[in-house]
Amino acid sequence: MSKFREHLSLTLPPGHLHLPVEQSKFSPASTIDPSPRYSESMRDPFHRLSSKDIEAGSPQSSSSLRDRFTKLFFDLRTFHNAAPAQAQESRLSQWPPLNVEKRRCMCHHDPHHEAKTRRRKRRSRCLLILLIIILLFLIGNVTYLNVRVLPLINTASSLSTNPTTQVLSADALQCISQYTLNAPSSPSSYPCSACFATLQGVPSSFMSNAANSQDARIISNAVQFCSLRAVYETSDAQGQAALGNGSWSQNVSFCTWTGVTCDTSGRVSSLALTYPGVPATLSNEIGALADLQALTVVGGNTIPAGSLPESFGNLTAMTTLHLESTAITALPDALFSSPGLTNLSTLALLRNSKMGTSLPSSIAQLTGLHSLLVNSQALSPSPLSVIVNSSALVASLQTLDFTSTSLTGTIPASISSFRNLTQLLLSSNNLTGTVPTMPSTLKVLQFGGNSALTGNFACNANTLQTCSFAGTNVSVAGCGVCQNATASS
Image 1: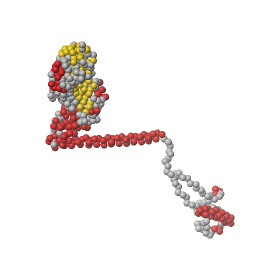
Image 2: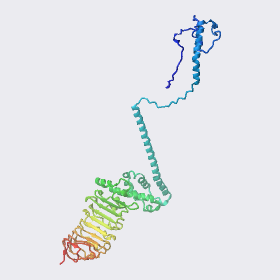
Image 3: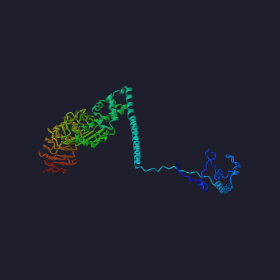
Image 4: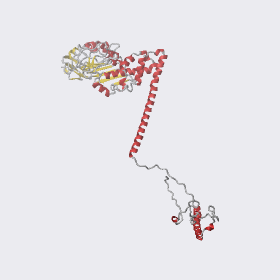
């Protein structure tokens, strides 16, 4: 049905409802002649009948006088009304086109339908975002694999074509691949138990070959990672929590772990472990840190415990060893012999109750030892005689500290032969006898707490800066820097 309604009109003659019903004269059942009052001439006032009725075949003259006057007046009236209408029709202009605007049907408001539509749109947007994320992830994976895997393939192909580099086993290549691809995202899943020994077994000729520098660096990183992860894994729950707070075993960037310091080449150069973040024992893997120069372990008196691992002697680059408050047992006697820790310059052993009463005899072979500190742990017999008779130590020692080590006996007279000794600290011991002549280079002298020491001490006031003979029976002459000392008579 059209939305537009037009006003239509139909003009009927007056009194049309009162016209009698006429029947066709051509009908066989008709017995009445048609009335001339409503004829074809009335429907078409401009139609002129002929003198004879064509259909009836009878002449018009048969009409009555009244009918003729009626027709005459009807013609005059309709002709008078039709003429202005025709003139008016001729003056009507063409209707302008209807500009019908198409609008959305404002149908019945359905909140349930609108809610479903919104949910459908939201679901479509979520699916689109998820699809985009998946595509980005796949693109990233493909890119990562191209960057990481292709160099490994090139390395493998070069190994097959270059006979001088055909030394990596399939296991070694697998360990390299896993460390490169899997370990960064899941450090704890890297199979150190298998790969540590495999990668350590790679020949030095391969590692030193410049053509294998990329693989050599990966191997070195994987070995160091496993060495440090062993420290984490051998710690108790409290230790792992403390180390974990310092990023230990959380990623493969071990140079960023708390207490770990690396050199410019990415090799571990210093390791400092402080309770509670210490292992229960020092594992054998620590010996793989070939470039480690300084190791500091401050334990909790009961941990770390046990002996140093056999591989500890492999730390040939070490220059500083500091063990404090541990339960580590006696140091190996050959620890400082070649090829062991021969480059040591500082040895500090403090409050290690299980370490025994003697120092390794190989300590006398250290040519570069500058500082020897042993505090609060017993030394018996006194190592002073061994130390002063070592030509290497006489030439290198700058600091000798045996405070609270229960030393007994006398001070060797040859102690004056030290050429670079600047600090001598022998307080809180059980030394006896007199104080011999001290080295001329001495700046700090601590003998307090040795009640059995006697005699006179002639100090060198030109070099000595700090001096203490408190709690002794030593007389000091001409040395104002010696505080709390017995004045000479």
